[in-house]
Length: 174
Ligand SMILES: [Zn+2]
Image (cartoon, rainbow, N blue to C red; front, top):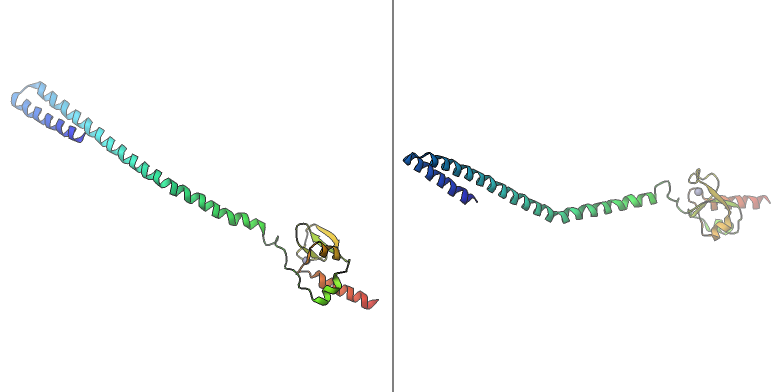
């Protein structure tokens, strides 16, 4: 197309020279027409090139889309996991450690029916006033039943040591 424009310019120049040498008005107008046609062709050629370049850019962009689309889907998934996992064990929801019970205390408490407190969906049993229990809704259970049900003593309020000590004191008093 650029070649066509160049030919038209040459044609225009030829017509211009011919017009000068012959003095015919029509040749001038043909020269002008040829130049205009050349200009139109050049504009069209530039548009075609621009369109081709933008098409190539689009092709490049679409070629990069799988990479670009793969990265964001992977990132939210990776980011979502810690976010989803975090609410499972927030610090105040985490259970206290299991009380380490001395064997002598353990032998005493296994048969005790003293009331301990359990919190729904939590594996520890507590004595009243435990800081972990706080204002949670508690379910009272006899100690031996709580143990049978699989509950373990809270390491914060140490129910086994507390109740063993209470049982020992009661036995000594009796
Ligand atoms: Zn406790």
